[in-house]
Amino acid sequence: MELVCNQVTKRFGSVVALSNATMTIKTGEVRALVGGNGSGKSTLSKILGGILYCDEGEITMDGERYEVSSPKEAKAKGIIMTSQELSLLNNLTVEENMCLCDLDVKGGFVDRSQMRKRTREVLKLIGKEELLNLRIDKMPANEKYLLELAKALIQKPQVLIVDEVTSALYKSDVEVVEKLLNQLKEEGVIVLFISHRLNEVFAFCDTVTVLRNGDTVGTFQVKDLDENTLISYMSGRDITEEIMVSDSIDESDLEIVLRTGKVHLPRFHKEVELDVHKSEFIGVAGLDGQGQTTFLRSLFGLESTVNVEFDGKPLTISSPRKAVKAGFAFVSGDREKEGTFKERSIAENFAVVSDMLLKKKPKNIDDYLKKAGVKYNRCEDLIISLSGGNQQKVVIARWTSSNPKIILADDPTKGIDIQARRDVHETFRQLLDKGSSVVMISSDDEELVETSKMMPLSRIIVMYEGEIVKTLRGSEITVENIAAYSSGKQKCKVG
Image (tube, helix red, strand yellow):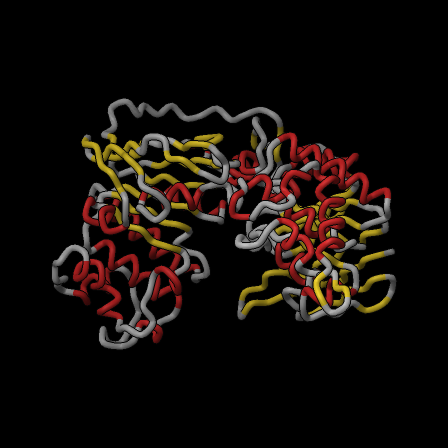
């Protein structure tokens, strides 16, 4: 069997998510698909899995054109995909979940005995036979991800796409996955393996295709690569072995405005601790899903109750309302779901925090909006009359009017144009000048580097698998270093 992607392109409006992706995979090959955030990995896998369609290019299987419009059609052609978001139904048992995509029927009724037999066989493969009758909602994350893989295996794939299934697994679980991949390889199954863990790429895979910004950098034999070379292909920068020397920064005299204490991240069974200084910009880097968003949302009372030290006093944050009243602000990159009210005016969107939570009527709305660089006609116009970038600037102006002490920003410039992004950065800089502090996640490493340079006091923390693995300061703050530590590498230097 041979699976060929030839110049596959996918657009979402004006955004090109995938551009001319090209690769060929053959029977019994385990192919890694790697790249940073926004490189196109998930887009390409979803096209192969029937979730998305390609706008241009061609995909063939054994020389025949491959065109599907749903996961069901993809399955009929032998392509099965695991889901990073999990496709398991919490209210059903393991047995029911395993066979849901292909129910056994006998005499017009579900054949429970056959379902049980098939499920027991696949659970034996992953060493989890004891889970047969349990409901999914009773299980920890690592078992759920193993079952996600088992659910794919029970469908007898010819092509298996494994999308970040190892991200929540323990070491012993990963060893099970390695054994299964070797078995599939011997059976002639094509495996497309997507992971941010480079050690797994080198341990499990024969070849690796690197994507960067939606383009195919190339396909390489794993045996011909080392970690530094692979990271260089992924980032577009040269990476060598030794760590850069940090600039000397004495933080002992800086005022600490927030001590987070140990914030628990349930998915990783780990805790994150961070001190934030007054007037400091902290950029949060890392590949998607490493705990950054959960950490920030916890500090705003969106995930769980946390106990912190704020302005030298203990503070319990159990809800966003309490966080806002204490002096916190939260800017989401998903403005449609968490930032704006579509049916409301620009003025109403601007004033919602002051009116509803702080019980203060904001004055001089136009002054705030103009200072934030918002381009609009009248405050009474609906916010959806504005461009995405201007909508986000309204959201940020909403918070600046409340004079927050801490701004928690979760990828706030996602999907907005370059000028709007610069306006957002400038607004954050002005807040620092007034004594506020900013903690900002970004999926764009270059943005974090650029933004840190314009701030009077800044550092970048890199998160990997629920931990802060590195803090970068001064001349250490480079795209190369961020890319290396985001991939789990322990030591690096710009070459």
